[in-house]
Length: 235
Image (cartoon, rainbow, N blue to C red):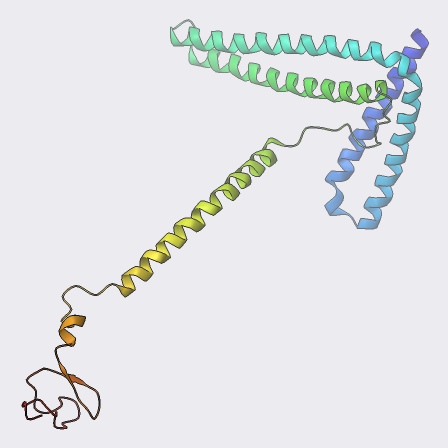
């Protein structure tokens, strides 16, 4: 049993080393030619695939390894909680004069560094648990690094875009209403206009020559000068 666990630990160490190198290859991708990048990446991807195949032959040990990782996870969570409480206590005691500023800042810096370290360890443990659980379910993980959650920034961006899409119809309705109001204003008579209303226009006399409507008492057309027949009441 101990020999098998030693083999498992060795394979785990190999896998950690290979995934770390693949990460560095990705970081250097833009600084080398595509041919060199693909060649080296494929080489280490194949090595990682070989390690994964060997790990798949030790499924019986992975359950114990997952339990060990779960225990480590709980210890780290407890350590994070204790570190957080320590920082809060120092800040409270500083506010009442038990600590001077220099001592308070020192404890906070050490606490922040400790929290960052614990977060890194916890992240790795969770990735390993997810990775080994794939073997337990009979799923052969890919040769790439263990999957991780999508970045929170990307999720927020998708949500924001979705909200914008929901607002678009409302904006279109508001624009249509604005255009409708503008059209109504164009057809509405301007205030102070001296244009005669329709009924009063009917009281005028139309010129038989050009059709211009003149006032009822006009003798000659205001537009063409033609005599308006009937204006004097001769007809």
